[in-house]
Length: 241
Image (cartoon, rainbow, N blue to C red; front, side):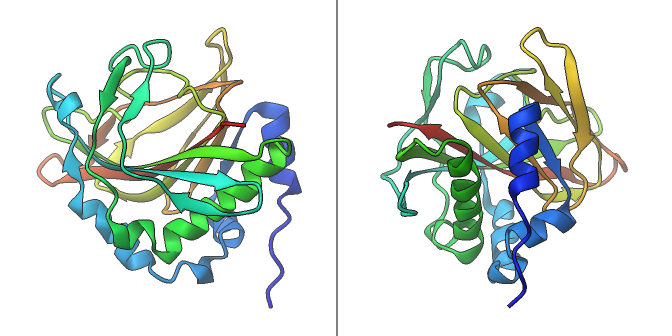
């Protein structure tokens, strides 16, 4: 059996800096890529996301699906009944104080090997950073940001922000005909702490949401005559007890 990568360096970076950029090569080891047995179908499911009608109302284009899970200290992760995504205006000045209902993540994807392994990795990683936490509220978001010749795509239309959770994983699934899309990390006074671009599938950003703010610059098509999109999976963990 291939030994698992040492996660202590990742934990140290998150504890020291409040964020970590992890390259795809490292994430393959951390996720045990051989366990992602349905990856092709998982990645292809981003072609079947629903339009974010809340954002479309303001003239922006984003597609997404959403699911809620719970995780316990004993390692159990369960999907919960479909429910709205809610953020207060404190965390989302663009769409806060709304119960936003999105189309659910499809059962085959929610129960599939790739998402379950990603959730297990997050549970292990974030649980090690907060060992006293017994129960977590977990949300999963599939996002596709579309860019057009006449309109840039906005991965974070609310600007530099916090999500109002404890920890966040942003995992790149695909970039097609896209340029820009730089992730920026900021201190409480909004001074820049770091920046990087998720370029390859499985490039990842991990964020201690209570300590730092994050944002992503707008994306534009490399070739304006062709479709362009940026696909990411966002997983958030919030301690409940």
